[in-house]
Each structure stands twice: as C-alpha cells, then as structure tokens.
Amino acid sequence: MSQPICSIEGQEIATWKRVQKLTLCRQLLQRCCDEYRERHALPVEIDDRNFTTAFFAWIDVVERSADYRRQNEQDYFQFVFGVLLRDLLREKAIHLKKDASTQLRPSPGNIADWWPAGYVLTHFCIGTLKATLREQCAVEVQPSDAISHPAVWQSFRENMIEEPGLAIAFFDKFMGLEPNWREPTQINNRPAAARRPAKIQ
Image (cartoon, rainbow, N blue to C red; front, side, top):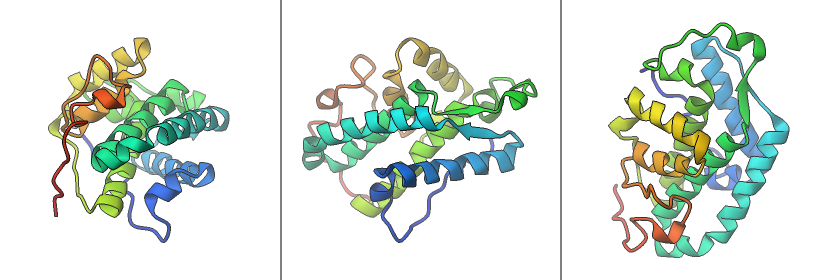
C-alpha cells in the first residue's frame, strides 16, 4: 500500500475549529484530493452540493453529542470523525472525474485506486482526527494494521451500501479501537463510553 495522504500539519487556526467551518473544511478536503491526484494521476473532485449536505448533517451530530466530550474527550473526537466519514461517503461528497473512471482497472489489493472516494475520505478523516487529538488532547495516535488489509476495505465498501453507519465502526477498526458493529451510530453505547483513556505523551 502506498504512503498515506492527508497528513495535516499544525496551522494558525486549530484543526478542530477549521473543520467545523464549511469553507475551511472544504479547503482541507481539497488538499487531500490534490495530493491524491499528484500521487495517482487520477482527478478527484468535490461535489459542492453533496459536500455541503454532508457537512451540515455532521455538524448537527457534533452539537448533539457535545455532552459526551466531557465524559471521554478522546473517544468523542474518534466518534465524530467517524460520523464525518459516514456522512461524506453517504452523500457522495467526492468522485472521480467521469473520463478518469474509464482509465481504472484496479485490483482490490491496490486500495487507493480500487476505491478512490473511500480511500481519500478515510485518510482525510484520519488526518483531521490525528491533528485534532494532538492539538486538543495532547495525544498521538496512528492507524492500526487493518488500514493496509484489502479484505477489510472490501468489507467496508460492501457494507457501506446497505448500512452507511458502519463507516463509524470501520473507522474505529482502522484506528485500532473496538467497534460497536450493532449500533455504531449510538455514541452512548460505544465500548469506550464508560472509561477515560490515559494520555499518551
């Protein structure tokens, strides 16, 4: 698997504040799309209408879940970025240009080209989560080995069609956490809901 995209460095405005602003969030996503194009020679475009729909659906969950942040701040961010992934995928916020899609003959082993939208959006959410945890919680996290397993990605893509909420569970799996496969959208039923994580310096 190629090197991941969407590594978000520290900025003047904190990542968490940026990602909650429509225009600034779109700018971060555009950077990921541009980076993907540079590496894979495939143009990925943002659908502005679909992105906006996904963004405001996500903001609603962010606001409704705010109480959980006081209980477990690190897991709160993990959850809401999983929801962001769900909403961006569900609303088809990005897509390959039509002429580019005819160029593809990828195998599932080549995850980045096999599912460009899933790959870009997953790494976008990982990048924003990592930066947010670093800035807000003084915690450094890395994806688990699952991120490089084609079989996991195949299952992710297939299950997303029937149940978009499973994107949250797969995002947890990618980050090395225990997923809630039965009720992934229920924040109070998360495995981490009853415990506080220790900070990793």
